[in-house]
Amino acid sequence: MKCENCGCKHDGSYGSGRFCSTKCSRGFSTKAKRKEINEKVSKSLKEKSHFHGKLKKKEIYHEIVCKGCKTTFSTLNINQKYCSKICVSRYSCIGITKSDETKLNMKLGVLKSYKNGRKVFGGTTKWYKYKNIKVQGTYELRTCKILDKWKKEKKIKDWEYTNDRVQYIGIDKKKHTYLLDFKVLENDNSFYYLETKGWEDVNDKLKWKAVKDKGDKLVVWFGNDIEKNEL
Image 1 (cartoon, rainbow, N blue to C red):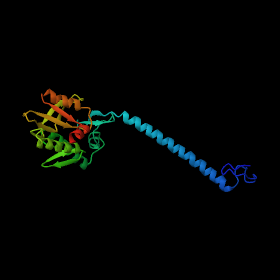
Image 2: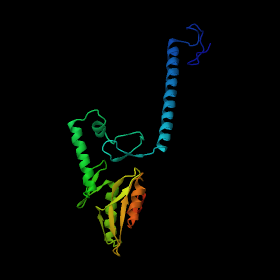
Image 3: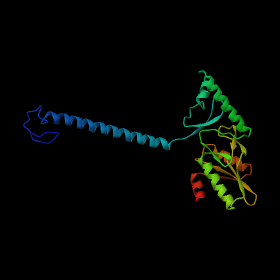
Image 4: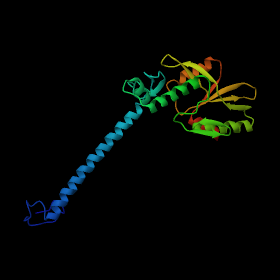
């Protein structure tokens, strides 16, 4: 007889005769079980990879008006009603802590300052200091350096990190305030606004249209535009 594990010939005296010894019997069982486990893990990983790949392609951000504080926020969940846990606590009748109350008041204060034309330093994007100004994110920081280089080479007359704002109607049909990034003064004393973006938001086209409807020129730089102008 031939052992199913090691392949050696034997007299069949051990067990049912499938294996030549206890070692081969146990080894075969462990080997088969490990193969089965590996196949299951491999299949599971492939399914997860396939699922996430599909999910990534179908990601759509929705602009929702918070049921509580009435501000507009972006989310993947079209059924989301509140912009934050603070608003859930305050407006959904499940109670609110003193700490949450303070955070919410700060948030509403920031929004009020923003609408009144004051610079607001906050958000999840990191702020950087460039000379005597604060800029938001690496795209804006890199753009500052490009504009300074252009000014030195006399390609432009000057530039500023502007505080100019434009009112626009969002997809929620409500009025919002759009803060522009840069104001570039050309050598003939004309100017245009320069916006830096990582991606195009659902409200961006409405913002940009509002600037152009006002009669101003607007240029939008994405990551690849910044890289080209850095060369």
